[in-house]
Each structure stands twice: as structure tokens, then as C-alpha cells.
Image (cartoon, rainbow, N blue to C red; front, top):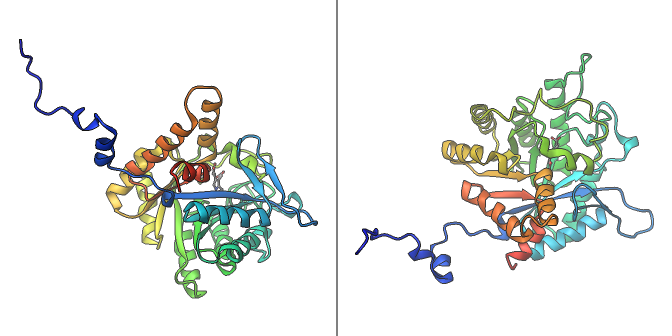
Length: 335
Ligand code: PBG
């Protein structure tokens, strides 16, 4: 007896490897990756300093010289952009984040070292926020009541952005979530002659439990009291993310970021569909640690987990992904 099987069988195009390759909608490549790197002070003798980060197995802080080496590695792997984060020495942190404005701070030195090592073969994204420089671990300065003061902080962020642009940053990435800072930074960059310096705003950044290992990496975790809920978004909110993105675009952001990544892919899709602009996602430290822990526990194949999650970001509509797996993924992709 002949069953009423459908004329169209979707398994037909999946039956062979060549056919799967032919019908593949998304092709992940090293060019989709932004590699976040942590910078730390070097030794006086000219050896390379590498400090492994316990909560981010496989990720280290590097001294400026080590960062230049990573830049060469990234260029060889076809990774188009690096994101820099400093582990500022304890005694250089204060309640006003003074070190963020030092033209010779770790970020500026790392930026220049990358430029010396690889010229303009790679983009340098610098994070704008005060948490790696404050003695209290918050992203801005505090008022008398301990509230992160928006407008005063924004003024410092503008100066921080100019400091980074003057050192040679290509993309200024404000991750602080202060209101109005993108417009102020854009105006200052134009006035300062940095017309081609881009702004990638962390437009929809959530107050997430997935940032723990990052705070260890930049040394702010132990300093932070309380949380960041008065400026980072409530994980329950989607509409508000669209409002944040609309404002940052109106203020001059060239591209926008959603952060964290995997738990917020619905936000990526909504932003992409609504605004049709370049959208990036940050697969953050806790997501990286989760994949590494799963693989170490035998709950999944590490390489497959890495490539599947990164592919999912592209499928959702991302132009690129910030991921600590960038170098490993680029190697897997056969660069
Ligand atoms: C700082 C900043 C954070 C991250 C990127 N920039 C931490 C925070 O907001 O507390 C998190 C990145 C990660 O977890 O990988 N403003």
C-alpha cells in the first residue's frame, strides 16, 4: 500500500555532504570574528609576560609586547579586528578613573604596539568605560549618594575616547551605558579630526550574570560593590533594547552591539530586522567559560560547540562576533 508521502522531502538536500555545502545559508569565516585581548603591565627585563586567567581557561592577560605578538597571530589567521581591555595596576585606580585619560596608559601603549607590529592590517577596537580604572569597579564616577552620575561620567568618557583615538584606535566602543554619550563622543571625534574613527556602541548591554570572569580578567571584580543595574539593562526587557539602539544610531553610532550573546539572540534578530544596520554580538566571558566547562565535563565536543554557537550568531543576523574563541575558531575554519 502506497503511503501519501509528500513530494517534497527536506531530507533530500541533506543527504550528502556536497549537497549540504551547496544549500548552506550561512558561511562562518575568520573575517566574522573580533578577538578580545586583556593587557597587563610587562616586566622590566624584556621577557613576555603571560598571566593565565583561572576563570577563563585558555585565556591570558598579555603584556604590551605579548599583545603585539597576538596581533601578528590574528593577522595570519585572517581575524580583522582586536578588542582591548586593560588590567590597570591597583595603585593606578582611583575614584575618578584618572588613569583612563593618561596618554601613556596600557590601552594606548598596546594600541601603538599593535600598530607598530602590523600597521593597518588589523582594526583596533577600544572599550570606553571607567570600570578598569575606578577603585570602586563601577563604569562611571559616583555622586554623593553612590549613584553613577550620568553626565559627569559622559564628559570623562569623551576625554577617554579622544585619548584612545589619539593613540590610534579605529573603533571606539562605549560599553558604559550612560545616556547621551554616543552623540558627545561623535561630536568630539569630529572636532578632533578623527572623522574616520568609528563608533560601535554597546547599545543593548544587559546587567548580566555572565560577566564574572571578565571582571576577574580586568581586576575589577573584587573591587565592585553592588551591581550595575542602574545603567545596564534589565534582562527581562526587549522593547527597551530597540529604544537604546534607536538613540545610539541617531547619535551617530556606525554599528551597534548586543551583549551578552547567546541568551539575547532574540534581541539581535529584532534589532537587525527593525534597523537594517550592522549588528554585532559579544559572546561574553561567562558564555566562553560555560562552553569550556561543558567540554571539560564531557558534555559536548568543544570544537563543535564553538563553531555551532558562532554560526548561530551569523544566522541571527550578526555582522560579526566578539569571542574569546576567535583564534581557535579561525584555526578550525582553516585560515
Ligand atoms: C566594561 C565591560 C564589561 C564587559 C565588557 N566591557 C563588564 C561589565 O560591564 O561589568 C564584559 C565582557 C565579558 O564578560 O566578556 N564595561
